[in-house]
Length: 243
Image (cartoon, rainbow, N blue to C red; front, side, top):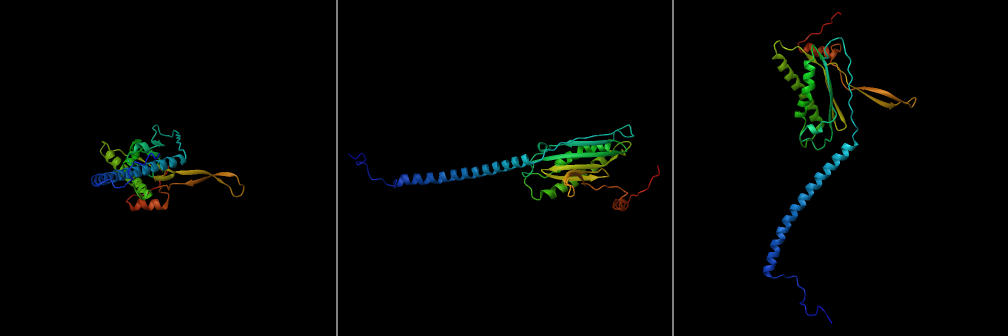
């Protein structure tokens, strides 16, 4: 006995009314599907970015800061320092390609401690406000400009504050700052404080590992001819004091 013998032949024609309803439903379904596809693609791209960022961050070397100070001839400590091994949470809308931001700085004050303290408290804050935001191209160029603008702004802000005092402040300070963006080190400096990189290298002759130093900054010291000429071109003078 054929169980399906009394059923009509199958057809793909749903009839005029049903066909119209099916056609309308198909357009709506397509629209919804496109929305879901776009949303899914955006989610996949965002997940991929986050995954790449996490992988990049996991591969970065760990940074640890230490500081040592020695009392000099003056009663007042005129130097200052800043150790901020993780600044990523302190800045909003960080560029997607940046997974780590760190900052270390030393300020050698002279004529008082107010300039060095001001720089220690404000320079990195100004840096964060000027750091590139969002998706950017040529990040290295923008970071360099950011550092230059930050030094100018901090200098102007301190001069404004110092000149408004009665009597006016005469303090000054050097500045040597290291900004770490992922695995790239940017060093910016003013004055004669020095930044040096020490690393172990394999000696070619003995095969043993030895410590090698690499200068990361150029001192602004009037004993250097180029710096002395810069001072004089700016209207200053350099004299040698007998002690």
